[in-house]
Image (cartoon, rainbow, N blue to C red):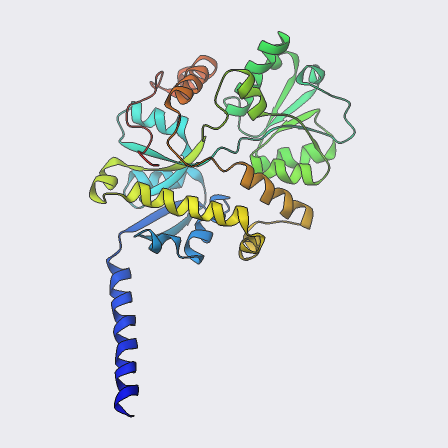
Length: 324
């Protein structure tokens, strides 16, 4: 080997060694996630496109069987972040835990009705069955109840029959025509719309009518303040990687193709609807509107009581990460 080639080889080896050492020195974010959760689409996009290392950390995704297990993992320091809605995080913070919320999604769905339904408003669902995936304290259900009361003087709970069940059950019941209307997790609603069901009203529309800020992100990553203190800038880094992933998925249809196998889609219609609704649920970059969040929390406290919000009747200080 001549001297020039030998020198070039040594430089390449040196660059690889330096790069590997640098990657090993990056702080690791261990993300505890539901094995089939939609957050995996974003996390896969982050790692596949190197957005984590670009922002100075290494993402380690750890799948769990249920949400309860992800929460136990964070509490027991087996993981650093998990996903939850910020009302739950506020409840934990008010109870003394040092959890901090990093915005991820504002996707909250709405009510869908069968494609042959004549219903034009919630008022038209009186006397019928409404399927609800999130249980009696589901936040979408509570907002829609408040909206029906304000707009029509209607007690939606009293004037309809509620059928509570797991998201797949509500999905199947809705498509079979057993329900007058259905409230489900956003990705199931997307598939229901792809199958021909029609959105009667979105939670975003109802929230706006109630004077709430529909751009307030409901879902996010939460981590301990102690983890942030030990890794300065880590919350902003995760937020930046999340935002980069969202920007890519919103602008480049090809970026979705590697994610398709994990999206459990049965048709192109489902794939396209899921993509559109995911992008629509991406919150704008910037800090959370604290006044808007406080109004939302107070409404949840009024409708769901202590069973929903615990001691978090006002917005806990430090709840939202200082990201921009």
